[in-house]
Image (cartoon, rainbow over all chains, first blue to last red; front, side, top):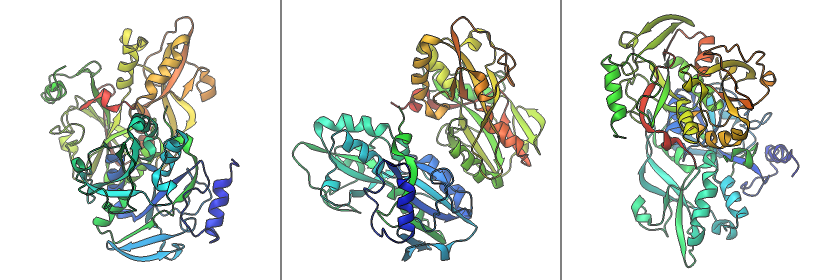
Length: 260
Length: 260
Protein backbone atom coordinates (compact mmCIF):
# COMPACT_ATOMS: atom_id res chain seq x y z
CA UNK A 1 0.00 0.00 0.00
CA UNK A 2 1.23 3.57 -0.61
CA UNK A 3 2.44 4.91 2.71
CA UNK A 4 0.64 8.22 2.30
CA UNK A 5 -2.84 6.80 1.82
CA UNK A 6 -3.79 7.73 5.38
CA UNK A 7 -2.81 11.39 4.78
CA UNK A 8 -4.60 11.42 1.41
CA UNK A 9 -7.75 9.98 2.93
CA UNK A 10 -7.70 12.59 5.71
CA UNK A 11 -7.29 15.34 3.09
CA UNK A 12 -10.34 14.07 1.20
CA UNK A 13 -12.31 13.95 4.44
CA UNK A 14 -11.15 17.47 5.32
CA UNK A 15 -12.31 18.66 1.88
CA UNK A 16 -15.75 17.18 2.55
CA UNK A 17 -15.41 14.57 -0.21
CA UNK A 18 -15.82 11.47 1.98
CA UNK A 19 -18.90 12.08 4.10
CA UNK A 20 -19.44 8.42 5.01
CA UNK A 21 -18.35 5.79 7.55
CA UNK A 22 -14.63 5.03 7.37
CA UNK A 23 -14.86 1.22 7.50
CA UNK A 24 -12.59 -0.08 4.72
CA UNK A 25 -10.86 3.25 4.05
CA UNK A 26 -7.02 3.41 4.15
CA UNK A 27 -6.68 -0.33 4.80
CA UNK A 28 -3.83 -1.27 7.12
CA UNK A 29 -3.92 2.06 8.94
CA UNK A 30 -5.29 2.27 12.47
CA UNK A 31 -8.54 4.15 12.95
CA UNK A 32 -9.41 5.83 16.23
CA UNK A 33 -12.30 6.96 18.41
CA UNK A 34 -12.23 10.65 19.38
CA UNK A 35 -13.20 12.13 22.74
CA UNK A 36 -12.64 15.86 23.36
CA UNK A 37 -13.17 17.19 26.88
CA UNK A 38 -12.46 20.46 28.71
CA UNK A 39 -9.19 20.34 30.62
CA UNK A 40 -10.92 20.23 34.02
CA UNK A 41 -12.17 16.69 33.22
CA UNK A 42 -9.00 15.48 31.48
CA UNK A 43 -7.05 14.06 34.43
CA UNK A 44 -10.02 12.06 35.74
CA UNK A 45 -10.80 10.79 32.24
CA UNK A 46 -7.19 9.74 31.58
CA UNK A 47 -7.07 7.94 34.96
CA UNK A 48 -10.36 6.26 33.99
CA UNK A 49 -8.77 5.07 30.73
CA UNK A 50 -5.66 3.83 32.59
CA UNK A 51 -7.89 1.80 34.93
CA UNK A 52 -9.99 0.40 32.08
CA UNK A 53 -7.51 -0.31 29.29
CA UNK A 54 -9.71 -2.87 27.52
CA UNK A 55 -12.63 -0.54 26.72
CA UNK A 56 -10.41 2.59 26.72
CA UNK A 57 -7.11 1.87 24.95
CA UNK A 58 -5.42 5.27 24.65
CA UNK A 59 -3.51 5.76 21.39
CA UNK A 60 -2.70 9.45 21.92
CA UNK A 61 -3.57 12.32 24.23
CA UNK A 62 -3.04 15.67 22.53
CA UNK A 63 -1.48 18.54 24.45
CA UNK A 64 -4.22 20.69 26.01
CA UNK A 65 -5.47 23.07 23.31
CA UNK A 66 -3.60 21.31 20.51
CA UNK A 67 -5.41 20.17 17.34
CA UNK A 68 -2.50 18.18 15.91
CA UNK A 69 -1.94 14.53 16.84
CA UNK A 70 1.84 14.87 16.49
CA UNK A 71 2.50 11.23 17.37
CA UNK A 72 -0.15 9.29 15.45
CA UNK A 73 -1.01 11.70 12.59
CA UNK A 74 1.40 14.62 12.28
CA UNK A 75 0.02 17.62 10.31
CA UNK A 76 -3.55 16.37 10.74
CA UNK A 77 -6.15 18.64 12.35
CA UNK A 78 -8.47 16.97 14.81
CA UNK A 79 -11.09 19.71 14.21
CA UNK A 80 -11.55 19.04 10.48
CA UNK A 81 -10.18 15.60 9.60
CA UNK A 82 -13.14 13.53 10.75
CA UNK A 83 -16.13 13.45 8.41
CA UNK A 84 -18.79 13.93 11.08
CA UNK A 85 -18.69 14.97 14.75
CA UNK A 86 -21.18 14.93 17.58
CA UNK A 87 -21.35 17.70 20.17
CA UNK A 88 -22.80 17.05 23.64
CA UNK A 89 -23.50 19.72 26.20
CA UNK A 90 -24.33 18.86 29.80
CA UNK A 91 -24.69 15.23 28.69
CA UNK A 92 -27.17 16.06 25.89
CA UNK A 93 -26.58 15.53 22.17
CA UNK A 94 -26.89 19.05 20.77
CA UNK A 95 -25.35 19.04 17.28
CA UNK A 96 -23.88 16.93 14.49
CA UNK A 97 -21.35 18.82 12.41
CA UNK A 98 -18.69 18.39 9.69
CA UNK A 99 -16.05 20.36 11.58
CA UNK A 100 -15.67 21.61 15.14
CA UNK A 101 -13.73 24.84 14.61
CA UNK A 102 -16.50 26.95 16.11
CA UNK A 103 -16.47 24.84 19.28
CA UNK A 104 -12.71 24.91 19.71
CA UNK A 105 -10.84 26.64 22.51
CA UNK A 106 -7.41 26.40 24.12
CA UNK A 107 -8.69 24.45 27.15
CA UNK A 108 -9.81 21.35 25.23
CA UNK A 109 -7.97 18.05 25.53
CA UNK A 110 -8.38 15.46 22.76
CA UNK A 111 -8.12 11.71 23.31
CA UNK A 112 -7.68 9.19 20.48
CA UNK A 113 -8.75 5.70 21.56
CA UNK A 114 -8.19 2.42 19.72
CA UNK A 115 -10.99 0.99 17.56
CA UNK A 116 -11.95 -2.61 16.87
CA UNK A 117 -11.48 -2.20 13.09
CA UNK A 118 -7.82 -3.14 13.70
CA UNK A 119 -8.47 -6.53 15.26
CA UNK A 120 -11.35 -7.28 12.88
CA UNK A 121 -8.92 -6.94 9.96
CA UNK A 122 -6.57 -9.37 11.74
CA UNK A 123 -9.41 -11.86 12.37
CA UNK A 124 -10.52 -11.73 8.72
CA UNK A 125 -6.92 -12.27 7.59
CA UNK A 126 -6.91 -15.40 9.76
CA UNK A 127 -10.00 -16.75 8.00
CA UNK A 128 -12.52 -15.80 10.70
CA UNK A 129 -15.42 -14.08 8.97
CA UNK A 130 -17.02 -10.98 10.45
CA UNK A 131 -20.77 -11.44 10.05
CA UNK A 132 -21.66 -7.73 10.38
CA UNK A 133 -19.14 -6.73 7.73
CA UNK A 134 -20.26 -9.46 5.31
CA UNK A 135 -23.87 -8.32 5.75
CA UNK A 136 -23.09 -4.61 5.59
CA UNK A 137 -24.41 -4.05 9.10
CA UNK A 138 -23.15 -2.46 12.31
CA UNK A 139 -21.75 -4.77 15.01
CA UNK A 140 -24.13 -5.63 17.91
CA UNK A 141 -23.30 -3.74 21.12
CA UNK A 142 -24.65 -4.33 24.62
CA UNK A 143 -24.58 -2.72 28.06
CA UNK A 144 -23.34 -5.37 30.52
CA UNK A 145 -23.61 -5.97 34.26
CA UNK A 146 -19.81 -5.64 34.47
CA UNK A 147 -18.86 -2.35 36.14
CA UNK A 148 -15.92 -0.38 34.86
CA UNK A 149 -13.39 0.71 37.50
CA UNK A 150 -14.45 4.27 38.40
CA UNK A 151 -12.09 7.25 38.44
CA UNK A 152 -13.08 10.61 39.89
CA UNK A 153 -16.40 11.62 38.31
CA UNK A 154 -16.35 8.84 35.71
CA UNK A 155 -18.12 5.53 36.28
CA UNK A 156 -20.60 3.23 34.57
CA UNK A 157 -21.11 -0.20 33.01
CA UNK A 158 -18.84 -1.86 30.48
CA UNK A 159 -20.22 -1.86 26.94
CA UNK A 160 -19.26 -4.84 24.78
CA UNK A 161 -19.44 -5.70 21.11
CA UNK A 162 -20.39 -9.26 20.13
CA UNK A 163 -19.25 -11.35 17.20
CA UNK A 164 -20.41 -14.91 16.44
CA UNK A 165 -17.36 -17.19 16.16
CA UNK A 166 -17.42 -20.85 15.02
CA UNK A 167 -16.73 -23.03 18.07
CA UNK A 168 -13.57 -24.46 16.51
CA UNK A 169 -12.15 -20.97 15.91
CA UNK A 170 -12.73 -19.46 19.37
CA UNK A 171 -9.20 -20.23 20.57
CA UNK A 172 -7.73 -18.69 17.42
CA UNK A 173 -9.89 -15.57 17.90
CA UNK A 174 -8.61 -15.21 21.47
CA UNK A 175 -5.00 -15.61 20.33
CA UNK A 176 -5.29 -13.11 17.50
CA UNK A 177 -7.06 -10.37 19.45
CA UNK A 178 -4.68 -10.87 22.43
CA UNK A 179 -1.95 -9.55 20.13
CA UNK A 180 -3.71 -6.17 20.02
CA UNK A 181 -4.10 -4.87 23.60
CA UNK A 182 -4.02 -1.35 22.15
CA UNK A 183 -7.35 -1.92 20.41
CA UNK A 184 -9.47 -3.70 23.07
CA UNK A 185 -7.35 -6.89 23.11
CA UNK A 186 -8.64 -10.32 24.13
CA UNK A 187 -12.38 -11.02 24.67
CA UNK A 188 -13.89 -10.20 28.06
CA UNK A 189 -16.38 -13.09 27.86
CA UNK A 190 -17.11 -16.22 25.78
CA UNK A 191 -20.56 -17.84 25.56
CA UNK A 192 -23.54 -17.42 28.02
CA UNK A 193 -24.69 -13.78 27.53
CA UNK A 194 -26.76 -13.97 30.77
CA UNK A 195 -23.60 -14.22 32.85
CA UNK A 196 -22.67 -10.67 31.92
CA UNK A 197 -26.19 -9.30 32.21
CA UNK A 198 -27.33 -9.54 28.58
CA UNK A 199 -30.88 -10.92 28.67
CA UNK A 200 -31.70 -10.95 24.96
CA UNK A 201 -28.93 -11.27 22.39
CA UNK A 202 -31.38 -10.33 19.63
CA UNK A 203 -31.88 -6.86 21.13
CA UNK A 204 -28.56 -4.99 21.11
CA UNK A 205 -28.39 -1.59 22.83
CA UNK A 206 -26.54 -0.19 19.82
CA UNK A 207 -25.93 -1.50 16.29
CA UNK A 208 -27.81 -4.18 14.41
CA UNK A 209 -29.09 -7.60 15.35
CA UNK A 210 -26.72 -10.47 14.49
CA UNK A 211 -27.91 -13.72 12.92
CA UNK A 212 -26.15 -16.85 14.22
CA UNK A 213 -25.21 -19.89 12.17
CA UNK A 214 -25.11 -23.38 13.62
CA UNK A 215 -22.31 -24.09 16.10
CA UNK A 216 -21.33 -20.46 16.53
CA UNK A 217 -20.51 -19.06 19.96
CA UNK A 218 -21.14 -15.42 20.98
CA UNK A 219 -17.78 -13.84 21.86
CA UNK A 220 -17.73 -10.46 23.61
CA UNK A 221 -15.05 -7.78 23.43
CA UNK A 222 -14.78 -4.52 25.38
CA UNK A 223 -16.21 -1.77 23.17
CA UNK A 224 -15.04 1.75 22.35
CA UNK A 225 -18.55 3.03 23.05
CA UNK A 226 -17.81 2.54 26.78
CA UNK A 227 -15.70 5.67 27.35
CA UNK A 228 -18.20 7.85 25.48
CA UNK A 229 -21.16 6.36 27.34
CA UNK A 230 -19.38 6.76 30.67
CA UNK A 231 -18.20 10.28 29.93
CA UNK A 232 -21.70 11.29 28.84
CA UNK A 233 -23.27 9.88 31.97
CA UNK A 234 -21.13 12.22 34.03
CA UNK A 235 -22.62 15.17 32.09
CA UNK A 236 -19.54 17.24 31.34
CA UNK A 237 -20.27 20.84 30.33
CA UNK A 238 -19.05 19.98 26.83
CA UNK A 239 -17.88 16.84 25.08
CA UNK A 240 -17.17 16.27 21.41
CA UNK A 241 -16.82 12.87 19.73
CA UNK A 242 -16.72 11.44 16.23
CA UNK A 243 -20.10 10.30 14.89
CA UNK A 244 -20.55 6.51 15.06
CA UNK A 245 -18.54 4.79 12.31
CA UNK A 246 -16.88 8.03 11.22
CA UNK A 247 -13.47 7.40 12.74
CA UNK A 248 -10.20 9.36 12.74
CA UNK A 249 -7.64 7.74 10.42
CA UNK A 250 -4.11 7.75 11.89
CA UNK A 251 -0.73 7.14 10.22
CA UNK A 252 -0.10 4.20 12.57
CA UNK A 253 -0.04 0.79 10.92
CA UNK A 254 -2.28 -1.84 12.51
CA UNK A 255 0.80 -4.03 12.71
CA UNK A 256 2.61 -1.39 14.81
CA UNK A 257 0.05 -2.13 17.54
CA UNK A 258 0.69 -5.87 17.59
CA UNK A 259 2.57 -7.33 20.55
CA UNK A 260 4.45 -10.53 19.78
CA UNK B 1 3.15 -19.00 48.40
CA UNK B 2 0.66 -17.69 51.00
CA UNK B 3 -1.52 -15.14 49.28
CA UNK B 4 -1.23 -12.60 52.06
CA UNK B 5 2.56 -12.39 52.07
CA UNK B 6 2.42 -9.04 50.26
CA UNK B 7 0.13 -7.58 52.96
CA UNK B 8 2.29 -9.03 55.74
CA UNK B 9 5.44 -7.62 54.20
CA UNK B 10 3.86 -4.17 53.91
CA UNK B 11 2.78 -4.36 57.58
CA UNK B 12 6.35 -5.15 58.62
CA UNK B 13 7.60 -2.26 56.53
CA UNK B 14 4.96 0.04 58.04
CA UNK B 15 6.09 -1.02 61.52
CA UNK B 16 9.66 -0.07 60.62
CA UNK B 17 10.91 -3.65 60.85
CA UNK B 18 12.18 -3.97 57.27
CA UNK B 19 14.34 -0.91 56.65
CA UNK B 20 16.19 -2.35 53.66
CA UNK B 21 15.88 -2.75 49.87
CA UNK B 22 12.89 -4.89 48.86
CA UNK B 23 14.66 -7.08 46.29
CA UNK B 24 13.64 -10.67 47.06
CA UNK B 25 10.81 -9.77 49.46
CA UNK B 26 7.31 -11.20 48.84
CA UNK B 27 8.45 -13.23 45.82
CA UNK B 28 5.88 -13.46 43.02
CA UNK B 29 4.27 -10.13 43.92
CA UNK B 30 4.83 -7.11 41.73
CA UNK B 31 6.87 -4.27 43.19
CA UNK B 32 6.40 -0.69 42.05
CA UNK B 33 8.14 2.67 41.72
CA UNK B 34 6.36 5.58 43.44
CA UNK B 35 6.05 9.13 42.14
CA UNK B 36 3.90 11.65 44.07
CA UNK B 37 3.23 15.02 42.47
CA UNK B 38 0.93 17.97 43.19
CA UNK B 39 -2.27 17.81 41.15
CA UNK B 40 -1.25 20.72 38.90
CA UNK B 41 1.47 18.51 37.35
CA UNK B 42 -0.55 15.29 37.28
CA UNK B 43 -2.20 15.54 33.85
CA UNK B 44 1.06 16.40 32.09
CA UNK B 45 2.87 13.62 33.93
CA UNK B 46 0.20 11.04 33.09
CA UNK B 47 0.26 12.09 29.42
CA UNK B 48 4.07 11.76 29.58
CA UNK B 49 3.69 8.21 30.88
CA UNK B 50 1.11 7.38 28.19
CA UNK B 51 3.54 8.59 25.51
CA UNK B 52 6.49 6.69 27.00
CA UNK B 53 5.04 3.37 28.14
CA UNK B 54 8.37 1.52 28.11
CA UNK B 55 10.14 3.65 30.75
CA UNK B 56 6.87 4.68 32.44
CA UNK B 57 4.50 1.69 32.70
CA UNK B 58 1.63 2.90 34.88
CA UNK B 59 0.26 0.25 37.25
CA UNK B 60 -2.08 2.57 39.15
CA UNK B 61 -2.88 6.24 39.54
CA UNK B 62 -4.46 6.99 42.91
CA UNK B 63 -7.38 9.40 43.16
CA UNK B 64 -6.07 12.92 43.90
CA UNK B 65 -5.48 13.12 47.67
CA UNK B 66 -5.97 9.38 48.21
CA UNK B 67 -3.34 7.32 50.08
CA UNK B 68 -4.87 3.93 49.30
CA UNK B 69 -4.00 2.05 46.11
CA UNK B 70 -7.46 0.45 45.95
CA UNK B 71 -6.68 -1.49 42.78
CA UNK B 72 -3.20 -2.88 43.35
CA UNK B 73 -2.93 -2.94 47.18
CA UNK B 74 -6.27 -2.33 48.94
CA UNK B 75 -5.94 -1.18 52.58
CA UNK B 76 -2.30 -0.20 52.05
CA UNK B 77 -1.19 3.36 52.83
CA UNK B 78 1.16 4.91 50.31
CA UNK B 79 2.46 7.31 53.02
CA UNK B 80 3.78 4.62 55.37
CA UNK B 81 4.15 1.33 53.50
CA UNK B 82 7.45 2.03 51.80
CA UNK B 83 10.54 1.66 53.96
CA UNK B 84 12.27 4.82 52.79
CA UNK B 85 11.13 7.87 50.77
CA UNK B 86 12.90 10.77 49.13
CA UNK B 87 11.46 14.26 49.10
CA UNK B 88 12.44 16.76 46.40
CA UNK B 89 11.52 20.43 46.43
CA UNK B 90 12.03 22.62 43.39
CA UNK B 91 14.04 19.78 41.83
CA UNK B 92 16.38 19.49 44.85
CA UNK B 93 16.70 16.43 47.11
CA UNK B 94 15.76 17.82 50.53
CA UNK B 95 14.96 14.84 52.76
CA UNK B 96 15.00 11.06 53.16
CA UNK B 97 12.31 9.81 55.50
CA UNK B 98 10.57 6.64 56.74
CA UNK B 99 7.07 8.03 56.23
CA UNK B 100 5.62 11.01 54.39
CA UNK B 101 2.62 11.88 56.58
CA UNK B 102 3.98 15.33 57.37
CA UNK B 103 4.30 16.12 53.65
CA UNK B 104 0.83 14.89 52.73
CA UNK B 105 -2.04 17.04 51.51
CA UNK B 106 -5.27 16.53 49.59
CA UNK B 107 -3.84 17.86 46.31
CA UNK B 108 -1.22 15.13 45.87
CA UNK B 109 -1.54 12.50 43.14
CA UNK B 110 0.37 9.22 43.51
CA UNK B 111 1.59 7.14 40.58
CA UNK B 112 2.73 3.53 40.89
CA UNK B 113 4.95 2.50 37.98
CA UNK B 114 6.14 -0.98 37.03
CA UNK B 115 9.59 -2.15 38.13
CA UNK B 116 12.07 -4.46 36.41
CA UNK B 117 12.11 -6.89 39.35
CA UNK B 118 9.13 -8.60 37.67
CA UNK B 119 10.86 -9.41 34.40
CA UNK B 120 14.14 -10.26 36.12
CA UNK B 121 12.33 -13.00 38.05
CA UNK B 122 10.94 -14.32 34.76
CA UNK B 123 14.40 -14.26 33.13
CA UNK B 124 15.96 -16.15 36.05
CA UNK B 125 13.16 -18.74 35.90
CA UNK B 126 14.08 -19.24 32.24
CA UNK B 127 17.70 -19.95 33.14
CA UNK B 128 19.10 -16.52 32.25
CA UNK B 129 21.26 -15.41 35.15
CA UNK B 130 21.17 -11.82 36.39
CA UNK B 131 24.77 -10.81 37.04
CA UNK B 132 23.98 -7.91 39.40
CA UNK B 133 21.73 -10.11 41.56
CA UNK B 134 24.29 -12.94 41.71
CA UNK B 135 26.97 -10.44 42.76
CA UNK B 136 24.74 -8.56 45.21
CA UNK B 137 25.10 -5.35 43.25
CA UNK B 138 22.78 -2.75 41.75
CA UNK B 139 22.04 -2.98 38.01
CA UNK B 140 24.02 -0.61 35.73
CA UNK B 141 21.96 2.36 34.49
CA UNK B 142 22.83 4.88 31.78
CA UNK B 143 21.51 8.12 30.34
CA UNK B 144 21.07 7.60 26.58
CA UNK B 145 20.94 9.83 23.51
CA UNK B 146 17.37 8.60 22.92
CA UNK B 147 14.88 11.36 23.72
CA UNK B 148 11.63 10.52 25.47
CA UNK B 149 8.48 11.90 23.84
CA UNK B 150 7.80 15.15 25.72
CA UNK B 151 4.45 16.07 27.27
CA UNK B 152 3.70 19.53 28.61
CA UNK B 153 6.51 20.49 31.00
CA UNK B 154 8.05 17.01 31.04
CA UNK B 155 10.91 16.06 28.72
CA UNK B 156 14.36 14.51 28.87
CA UNK B 157 16.52 11.57 27.81
CA UNK B 158 15.60 7.91 28.16
CA UNK B 159 17.44 6.13 30.99
CA UNK B 160 18.19 2.44 30.42
CA UNK B 161 19.32 -0.46 32.56
CA UNK B 162 21.81 -2.93 31.07
CA UNK B 163 22.15 -6.65 31.63
CA UNK B 164 24.80 -8.89 30.02
CA UNK B 165 23.07 -11.75 28.18
CA UNK B 166 24.85 -14.76 26.61
CA UNK B 167 24.63 -14.39 22.81
CA UNK B 168 22.66 -17.64 22.46
CA UNK B 169 20.04 -16.44 24.95
CA UNK B 170 19.35 -12.97 23.55
CA UNK B 171 16.32 -14.12 21.54
CA UNK B 172 14.89 -15.85 24.64
CA UNK B 173 15.45 -12.70 26.70
CA UNK B 174 13.54 -10.64 24.12
CA UNK B 175 10.68 -13.14 24.08
CA UNK B 176 10.37 -13.32 27.85
CA UNK B 177 10.48 -9.61 28.56
CA UNK B 178 8.06 -8.94 25.65
CA UNK B 179 5.46 -10.77 27.75
CA UNK B 180 5.65 -8.00 30.36
CA UNK B 181 4.85 -4.66 28.67
CA UNK B 182 3.57 -3.46 32.06
CA UNK B 183 7.08 -3.57 33.51
CA UNK B 184 9.26 -2.03 30.74
CA UNK B 185 8.68 -4.89 28.25
CA UNK B 186 11.08 -5.80 25.45
CA UNK B 187 14.61 -4.34 25.23
CA UNK B 188 15.06 -0.96 23.57
CA UNK B 189 18.52 -1.85 22.21
CA UNK B 190 20.81 -4.87 21.77
CA UNK B 191 24.61 -4.60 21.46
CA UNK B 192 26.68 -1.49 20.47
CA UNK B 193 26.28 0.94 23.41
CA UNK B 194 27.67 3.83 21.28
CA UNK B 195 24.61 3.73 19.05
CA UNK B 196 22.45 4.97 21.93
CA UNK B 197 24.98 7.46 23.23
CA UNK B 198 26.71 5.38 25.90
CA UNK B 199 30.44 6.06 25.53
CA UNK B 200 31.82 3.90 28.36
CA UNK B 201 29.90 0.85 29.54
CA UNK B 202 32.15 0.62 32.61
CA UNK B 203 30.92 3.97 33.89
CA UNK B 204 27.18 3.77 34.59
CA UNK B 205 25.32 6.95 35.54
CA UNK B 206 23.59 5.06 38.37
CA UNK B 207 24.17 1.67 39.96
CA UNK B 208 27.29 -0.49 39.87
CA UNK B 209 29.70 -1.46 37.12
CA UNK B 210 28.92 -4.80 35.45
CA UNK B 211 31.62 -7.37 34.63
CA UNK B 212 31.11 -9.18 31.30
CA UNK B 213 31.89 -12.82 30.63
CA UNK B 214 32.99 -14.09 27.23
CA UNK B 215 30.38 -14.04 24.48
CA UNK B 216 27.92 -11.91 26.41
CA UNK B 217 26.02 -9.09 24.71
CA UNK B 218 24.89 -5.91 26.49
CA UNK B 219 21.10 -5.72 26.32
CA UNK B 220 19.34 -2.48 27.28
CA UNK B 221 15.87 -2.04 28.75
CA UNK B 222 13.95 1.18 29.44
CA UNK B 223 14.44 2.00 33.12
CA UNK B 224 12.09 3.20 35.83
CA UNK B 225 14.58 5.90 36.79
CA UNK B 226 13.48 7.76 33.62
CA UNK B 227 10.20 9.23 34.94
CA UNK B 228 11.85 10.37 38.18
CA UNK B 229 14.79 11.91 36.33
CA UNK B 230 12.48 13.62 33.85
CA UNK B 231 10.07 14.84 36.54
CA UNK B 232 12.96 16.19 38.61
CA UNK B 233 14.44 18.04 35.64
CA UNK B 234 11.19 19.98 35.34
CA UNK B 235 11.63 21.14 38.96
CA UNK B 236 8.13 20.65 40.36
CA UNK B 237 7.49 22.53 43.62
CA UNK B 238 7.33 19.16 45.38
CA UNK B 239 7.88 15.57 44.36
CA UNK B 240 8.11 12.47 46.55
CA UNK B 241 9.48 9.10 45.44
CA UNK B 242 10.59 5.83 47.02
CA UNK B 243 14.31 5.64 47.83
CA UNK B 244 16.27 3.59 45.27
CA UNK B 245 15.66 -0.13 45.78
CA UNK B 246 13.00 0.45 48.45
CA UNK B 247 9.95 -0.32 46.33
CA UNK B 248 6.22 -0.46 47.07
CA UNK B 249 4.99 -4.08 47.25
CA UNK B 250 1.60 -4.58 45.59
CA UNK B 251 -0.89 -7.46 45.82
CA UNK B 252 -0.64 -7.99 42.06
CA UNK B 253 1.01 -11.23 40.96
CA UNK B 254 3.83 -10.88 38.46
CA UNK B 255 1.98 -13.37 36.30
CA UNK B 256 -1.10 -11.09 36.23
CA UNK B 257 1.02 -8.68 34.21
CA UNK B 258 2.01 -11.24 31.58
CA UNK B 259 0.45 -10.95 28.13
CA UNK B 260 0.21 -14.23 26.26
